[in-house]
Length: 297
Image (cartoon, rainbow, N blue to C red; front, top):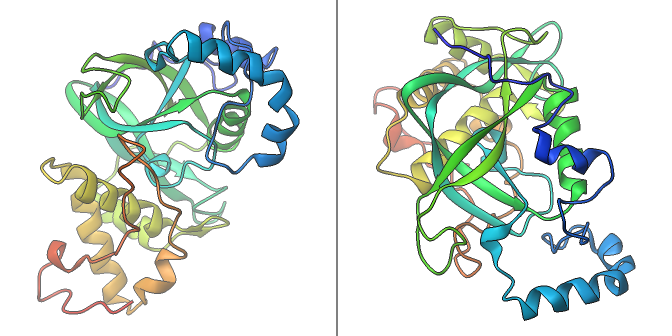
């Protein structure tokens, strides 16, 4: 039985992140825009003069990234589509939670008539959930996440310790855990669907589509992230749903290309020099030969 006593209302964030939504500043830093991914060039250019002194000061002080004000942990669509500017993306895990497709969705991957199912975290003393942490250096990203996850998605915010997969000079952690902010759905939110047999969950996912695309794309891209980034880790709930959803899609002769949509942009993980290749969607190794013989996309 999961407990949610530590969760806050969807409209709130942890206390030391709260000023991000009240005065637009990141803790004691004055740099509100960060370095991002180049998607916010206009805002960055307009603020270059204001940020020069801050950047020089950080350079003098060694620009110690272990003192980053805000890290956000993604375990669902954030693993493959963040949608915001960030300065680093690190693969790793949190403890005490397991990933479950118990949250309904009517704004991105479903409709009011046919809600989709997306991931949330359920407390489990022995649980480990893999995903990635994004280093955010500007309030714009968190405003975007507040709208995407809380206002539209029905998620609340919690804090947890994030443990990086790679501990080296290429990461800001050196093997030590860092506090991260996480968006988690609670049973009290209006979109909650809760537990159900995996066969039923897979049918709902295979038959739902919303403004952001097919619900199956959400699941399959998340499974692909796990297969490619952490190939030695087994996520039974996720991978069994992956198998069942693929079987459901194939049984209905739905082209997988129509489900997956456009490939997302590349995400730099663990090191700025290590750029992952775009997803290939070669699912044949994960479904029995009798169910899936060939996928040409």
